[in-house]
Image (cartoon, rainbow, N blue to C red; front, side):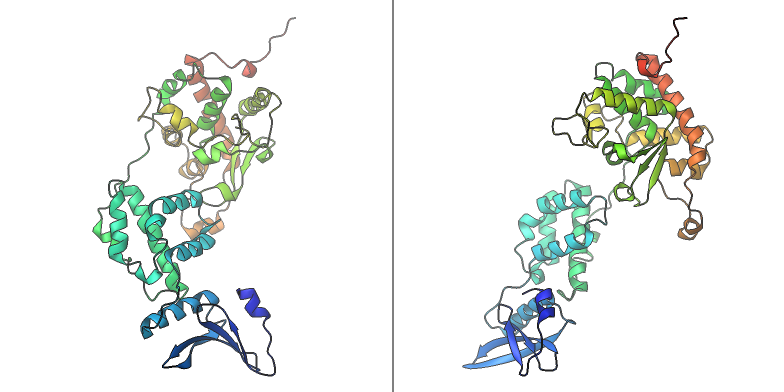
Length: 383
């Protein structure tokens, strides 16, 4: 029985009931009203308890109400909703609405579900969750995110009428506050240290690193770029992959366009929709590829892919780039919600000159330690 099946049930000349399992029935009256009934046996007699009307009480809510009522009456308990059911509800609500959805699902399934998934919702108490979280207390950032997701799941269950209250609402007070540590970065005048490490790497990786430094994109945005997103001299990233869920445009200077065209020649017939797809599975390169590579170099702990955004932002500040323009280059939101409602541009034209200047700067740093890229150099005439 599903909500769609219930909607299709029509009234008849006489009242009738439909068994929904676990002693829960849906009673359909001749007038078309549909109500939920818990049927149980007591002292040899069949007794019915009305739980509420449909659709005010959904099928999911009715099942949970029937379970709680049987617990209250101390009769043979029926199967109620578990934490795993609450997690499925959270998945339906969050999918497509948070950028880190897949990472959050993996975190929940690794650290929470093995211990909580079979528990009835009313049995997921603060002491139970606390004992689970103490298993990862040495990973405070992970612990905090797990606790946040537990609270989200339980709050959704409260809003859906599956629980009366969230018992873990104040559990965060037990743990120390997480101290935010900024990502490691190097100033722009030390970019030569990054390029020095590239000397033994293949040319496609040189191009990828140069593009990552130039574009100022987040790792996940940089790695999954598709050829169809390049429109003339502008890269247009769709809102669904952006952290702030809005379209972001990156001006492409002539040299970067030439670099991307050269990347096509390096693919040797293996061209697909992704720009940076040099693995065997023809999928986009891993978002942490640069960070993992840096961990094998002398820059381990001193720089990561995300830190390159800080390098670019610091360079723009030192070169007196207007604050709003610099923040837009990094796809950051500025101003109040009211101001953003009226200022809807993205300073694209102002950023073109800045981005070209930025390219000239990083390429000069690159050439200082690596040979110039031949496809970017003008061809000399024989005459």
